[in-house]
Image (tube, rainbow, N blue to C red; front, side, top):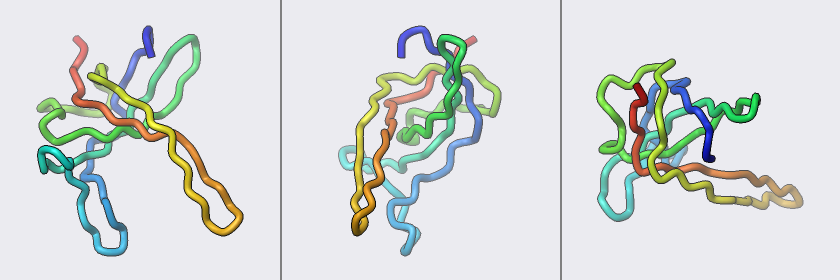
Length: 102
């Protein structure tokens, strides 16, 4: 996503692992709480909203909507779920951290 600009749309919220139990997602390696933040990415005259998962330690203090940020080590992973004869698919995004851009 070289040349892209990112801006915070929503504040981070804890990622829910299991909607039925309310269990919060944690990183398998570190055990830290995972959060979801929505960013708008603009590139080549187009914009899209990305829902990015980030560990709590990767969130900068004072993060607020409208702030310019740079995702550190942003990874997009394809996913697919099959329910009966319906297939849903998309991309999930994860970053190691967010860095505030001045």
